[in-house]
Image (cartoon, rainbow, N blue to C red; front, side, top):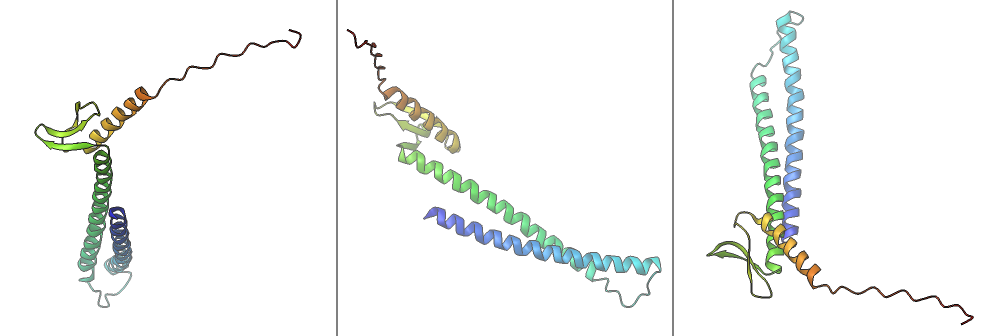
Length: 160
């Protein structure tokens, strides 16, 4: 459920980002045309037939507004992705029995033998997840029984 919400939010932000990018690019093209026209008038190649000088600062502001929105959306997407990864790690930690304790502060895991293992500080979620994975992988390797290899059978000749 959480991942669907994250995906929907990400798609919504990406579509708004695409709209803002398209608007900014269109405004840049219009601004470029206005500046070229002003350049021709100033160079004396064209007569001043009501050049709209106010279009230049207004166009520049529109570009600024849309580009700022694009950068803000990119930052939101990054934060959303980071939050999604942290949520996955917290779910993993909780499924494996790790707890976030207040005293002693931090992520802790209690082994089946009742031993409390410190994983990481509260803000270091990814570090806690990595440490728990390494602990569990070590435990599973230790608990796997080592099977002795069967001894190779001696080849007997049919004459015997």
